[in-house]
Length: 457
Image (cartoon, rainbow, N blue to C red; front, side, top):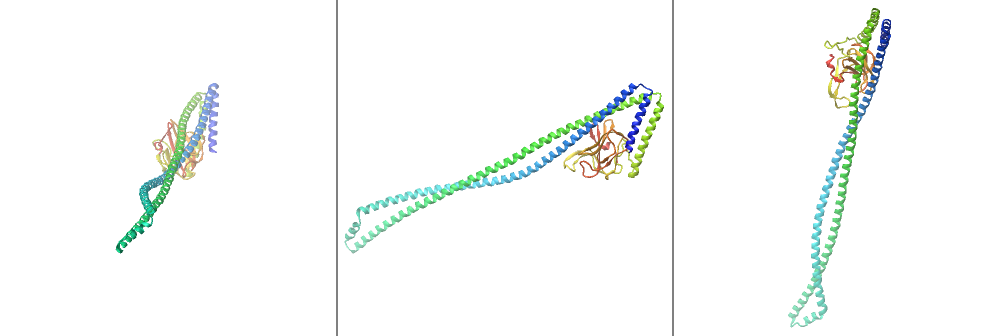
């Protein structure tokens, strides 16, 4: 209600001053100045709309960047998991290579056994062949001589002793023949055994070769899987980092646009002041200057009364008084609390868990506590976005802008002129916060500076 009263009184003041001026000065000059003021006001509104739109875009980009950074972190975690998998694959690959080497060693040993078996087989075959040839000669002799030869040997004995000797000789020949036959059979059996052993060893060698081929195929599969997993994650990580870089570049561009809009807003404000000063100068030259001054004083008195009532309400409800820095005349923006929960400078962000510049000071206070203007100026922004929550921006002139963030309720609108210590909002926890507090920021010529240069608690 008081806010509407302020606007009404200001409108009445402009109407009264304009009407007084019209009675004593040329209407064309007034119309020209009025037109300039209206155009400047329209320009100011357009700049504010552009600034709000740009800040919304910036916040959207920041959200996208945060989301992309989360994806980067997630991919990096996945990369760690993949690295573990790769280490496991490397271990399996190492085991497979070791088994391949063991199999190759077994193959070499088996080949040595086979070579030895071949040598033994050749020797056994030669012995068998020699025994066979000897047996053929003996059989041929027996066939040619027949059994009569043994009888003639016996009948040719001179006496009984000679007969016994000759019988023993024949027995020895017979035993020799049996021995030769046995040796031949043994040689033949040895050849057969060596052939069977060699066949078995060849089968075992083929089995070892099959195992070696299987281990080699497994090793190749492990290498392929490792390369595939690693390349897949690297490609995804590269793409996401590239996207994050694009978002960061767009955010930097939006920062430049915001700085340009602030500069344009400041220039427009200067032009408005100059136009109002020119209009005031013209009004001061009119014949009704005293009446105009009286009306202006009356209007000013109404405004002062409203300001006093607002200040009295602020003091009575909060049970505190405004604290003014004697060096800068800036008012402490949160009268109910001086508790600093996070100072200006680089810190570990409580939500994103990375080191960032904390561009202001966080003042911890109860929900709904008063937020007042640190100094007089024009409200150039009052609205909401996802990171700052409900915020108020006040242009104090000379390139200095203060920003009040995370409010639960806004008491002013863009275009309002506020005095030092005037109630502008209530403490809240909107936007990116972990609890109710006031985030108070100062910008000088488009750059963030320490608020402690202007306020003290």
